[in-house]
Each structure stands twice: as C-alpha cells, then as structure tokens.
Length: 311
Image (cartoon, helix red, strand yellow):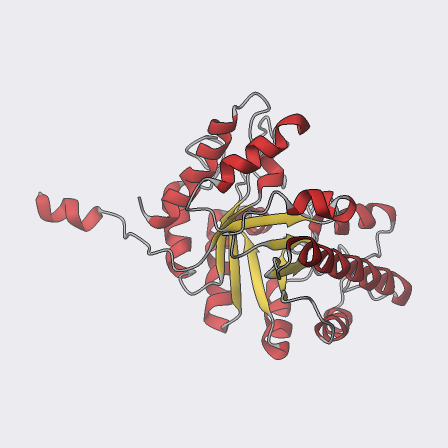
C-alpha cells in the first residue's frame, strides 16, 4: 500500500522560473488597489505582474510604477485588451492584418506600448518590463506573412530591456464562434522559430480553441518541443455559464479548486507546469467574485501556484 501511495504522489516542480500574477483581473474596488498590490508585494512566491495595455500604465505610469515591488524581477505586458478594443472599432486591425493601413495602425499601437515600457523604466529607474506579449490579430483574416513583416519591424526597435513574445489566442475554427480567432499555433511557432522569438500560452485561451483541457497541454508541449516556449499563464475556462461569463468565454475563470465549472484543475496545472519546466516564466490570471476579500483573492491565485509546484 505504501508503495502505491508513493507512486501516486504528484511530482513536486522546482520553481526555477519566475511566477507572475495578472493582478488586474482580480483587482478590488479602486480605493483598495494600493492595499491589494501591497498584499501581493508581501508574498515571496510572487515575482512580478502581467500588466494590461492600455490601462493605468498608459495614463498614470508614475502611479503604477509605485505598485511594482523592487524584488519583482519579471514583469510582462499583455497587449490583448487594447488589441481587442481596436478590433472592435476596426475588424481588420492587427499586426497580422492583410490590410496595410490596419497593420500600420497596429504597429503604431505597439509603439505606444514601447513608449509605456520606457516610461515605466524612467519612473522606476530600472528596466522593469521583461516581456511584451503581442498577438496575431485580426480575427478570421490574419496573414502569417503580414505578421512576420510586423514582427521583423518591431524586433529592430529598442524595448528598454524587454523582449517580445507572441501570446497565442484561440485560432479561427470554421463553424465555431471564436473568442479571438487569430492565427493557428503552428504558423505562430514557425514564425517565432524563424525569428528567434518566444511564445506565451494562456491556458484558458488554448482550452477554448479546442473545447478541451487537452488542447492547452498540447500547445504547451508543441512550443516546448519547438524550442520557443517563453511562458505559460494559467487562466481557467469551461463549457458552462458561470458568474464570470458565458460558456467557453475568455473569462479568466479561477481554478477548479475555487470554481467547479473550470477545467483548470490541480492535475492539469501540475502536468502543464512539468512540461513547461524550461519556460522563462509561469503565472496565474483569474477573475474573482466581486464580494471576495483581498486575502481570498490572493488565496485563489496561490492555489494555482501551489498546484504548479505539485503541492
């Protein structure tokens, strides 16, 4: 019996990669933002933030810089909020757009991110952003050749110590309503391998694409095997309507430990973290109930961290 119990014990993953949190998805009411960030700063297992663009870094870089702990060694920006805001205004917008004007608009948007990276560096006195996660918008009509050209142009610029990663979102699947509907991961991997760029996987967005937790695992595995895996952000998804949104929505569900409808359970987190052992960073980004206290919000994030470690 003892032997079988030992055999079933999950492998404990040594966290050699920084672990970051997308705190913006779990923020409390505005007058408690600083208190929440100070709580995050007090936890040794948190190594940095995933930061949305635009957002506060676009309008109040100095104030946001004060939320960044000096010991946070790895902070990443995700461009997905602004990308989707722009797609809502212009469906052809994106770095992978076949329309030259829409692609140029996306490059100008990326330049705004680069300026924000520089502003944060000025405000903190250090190169505080390690990674900028960009995307292969627009939906349905994205062109691999257009994205390659955009990436080549952006790679030639100075990003104040940050490097670019391509964050995969669900590809366009015929007959399936997309959340994002961008390029297939195979094309993204090919471009990243060619240009020496890393890829970031958001667990929930990959699960949404394949309507399965297996898809998220396979995407991480594909990137790792191709030598392009930069990071993995654990964010839940599932087939049921929840307080966080409709079925298969990009609602950043908590893990199954806190939201039973989420496919992101401890076993999936563990096996994905094991495959991603060589990634530059891991992380968690979840929405939480509006009534949740600050410690409860933190606990939901820490549940994912603990599962990734095999605890």
